[in-house]
Amino acid sequence: MLDAIDALVVGAGIVGVTAALARQRRGLKVMLLDQQSVVQGCSLGNAGVIAPGAFPLSAQHRIADLPATFLKTKSPAALHWASAPRLLWWGMQYAMATRPDKVHHNTNLLHELCRDMLGSYELLLGSDLPPINRCGYMAIHLSSAELGEATRLNEVRTSLGVAARMISGRDLIEIEPAVGNLAIGATLIELAAHVTDPAAFGTNLADVFISRGGLLRCNRVRSMESKANGEVTVRGEREDYSPGAVILAAGAHVNKLLADCGHQLSLASERGYHLELDVEPGFLTRPVGVPSLGVVLTPSQIGARFAGISIWLARIRRPAQTALIGARSHARNSACAPSPARSRGLERRATDYTGFLTHCRADPRPSLCLCLVVMVT
Image 1 (spheres, rainbow, N blue to C red):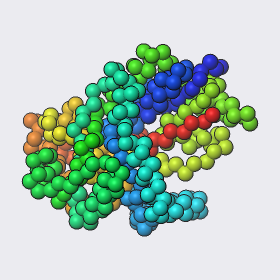
Image 2: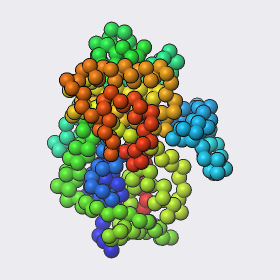
Image 3: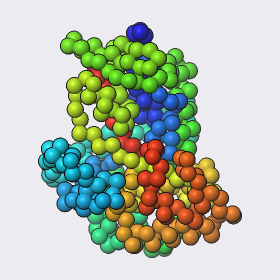
Image 4: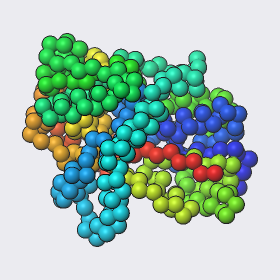
C-alpha cells in the first residue's frame, strides 16, 4: 500500500489536474490517479469555455419543465417508473432549489467561484500557462421568449459584475457571420475565454504538474473505505492508497465511490457528446452557445466542435432544427471539401450531424458528464 501521499486526486480531467496543481502549490505531495491516461474522459471533447460566471440549472429550468422531460419515452431523461419513489425526495429538493432566494444565493456563489478564473489560472501556472484565446463567448437566442429570458439573466450578470451586452441584426452578422442569420439576438460576454483543444490544454497542465514533482498513476479505483477516525483508504486494481486527503474529480463515477463511504449525494449523471466538424478554419471566432438546446459550438484545430448535454435534447423544436440545418448548410458551403465529422466510435458526414444530435445516444460511452469535486478528509 502506497501511503506517503498528502493528497490523492481521483480523476485526471481538467478539474482533477487543476485541483492537483492547487494542492501541489501549497507544498503538498500530490498523486493524480485515473483509470485511463490524462484527459480521456469528459474533458477530452468539452467546449473549452472559461467563463467569468455561471447559473445553476434551477435558474434556467423550472420545476414545471421536468414532467415533459421525464414523461417522454425517447428522452435520455425518461422516467423509469420503478425508480419514481426514489425520485420523489430529489424532486422536492429540486423544487426548493428553484425558490427565488435559493436561486439568487446559488447564482452568487457560482459567480464568485468563476469571477477571476483566468486570474486563477495565471496565478497557478505562471509562465507555464498554455495558450488561451481571450475573445469572449456568445449565446444566441432563437425566439422572442429566449430573448426575454436572456435579458433577465443579463441583468443578473451585470448586477454581479459580469459585463454582458445584447447584440442583433447587422452587428451580430458582422461579429459571427456563420450564425448571425440564425438568431434574433445574442448575448456577448467579452471577458470569457476558450481553448481550441481541451485535451492538449489538459495534457499541458498535467506535464506542468509532473515537472513540479507530482505523481501520476494509471489505476482503476474499485472502492473506498472510510474509518471512524477519518482515515480514508482508496482501493485500486493495482495498488491501494491511504493519503492524508482524497479529492474526487471523477464526474459521474463519484456517486458510487462516496456510497462506499456511506455518503449519498443527489448527483445527476448527464450523458453528453462531442462532434468535430472539419470545416474551414476561422468558421467561428469564439464559442457560440445555444442555451435552449444545451449545445456549444467552439472553434477547434480542424474547424469547429459541437459539445452538449443530451439530457435536454428532447426539447429541440422545429425552429431549433431549422437553425441547426442552417448552420449545417453554412458549414457545407464554407468547407473546401466537407470531410467526415468525427465522434467517439462514429463517423458521419458533416452534412448529417443534425440527425446525430437528435439521436446522440448511439454512442454508449459518455464523452461529457457532470463533474463534481468532493474533498474527503
